[in-house]
Image (cartoon, rainbow, N blue to C red):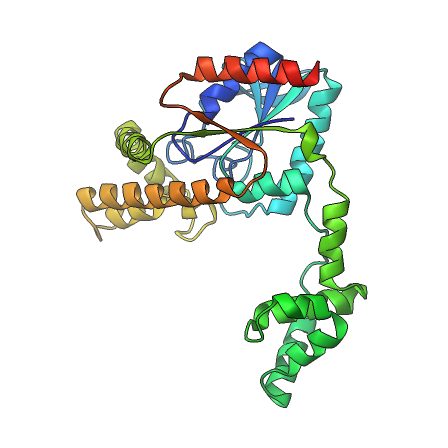
Length: 318
């Protein structure tokens, strides 16, 4: 598979579209905000339309099917595990159509989970967790850590004795499966669904000052294009302020402005600041990702970068 990753405002979407046209591909979005319906301006969702093709609905952007965008209600969550399950199913369908899947996005957890797999751990058992918590209260601080050292000494070495939440989760997994959580993670690494050597991962980047300038310009454009009106529409549809979708960058500050809690100028400043901080976190995350080839989007257009990726993929796979 081909991955196009990197921080926000580096032109990943346009590069992916240009590449898909050249390579006969379809795009799978790895963006945890663009999944939501009604949140378009504030998430920089690519402009497209839903079309029915062979009795199946596709979100089409400039003639290219763009998967895993604009499908989820803003009140709902979408975990990394759910993303991986959905993405793998779509990737297989794309391959069955004789096309090449192109993964495009900046949500590091989604991308890492798709590349490296995700442990299929059992869901939380609230009754068991409460029972364990009561043991800690009854027998004193450190009691559960002693249990963890007995049932999963490997995890005990990695988990701080005061991190009660991780200690409880590790014991919980062992109680429910009789397999230490450390063993689950080993199996996850051994059973990668997709070998890293089969993937081509390209990261888009540019000098920090230019990236921040791009971000500031994008925020100004979003506000001009109707971000405030989009947010009012969501509130009018009775979505609570703390809906998962409305936790996306920018919306909380727009809501504060709508409620006359902050000025327009302060809202704009805070959105720019939070987006820059987010971009910095994205850069840090992807710098830790193995085998990424970084391409400077300030020196090359999306068209030029897509041509380079096309040539690289052609040489690798032929």
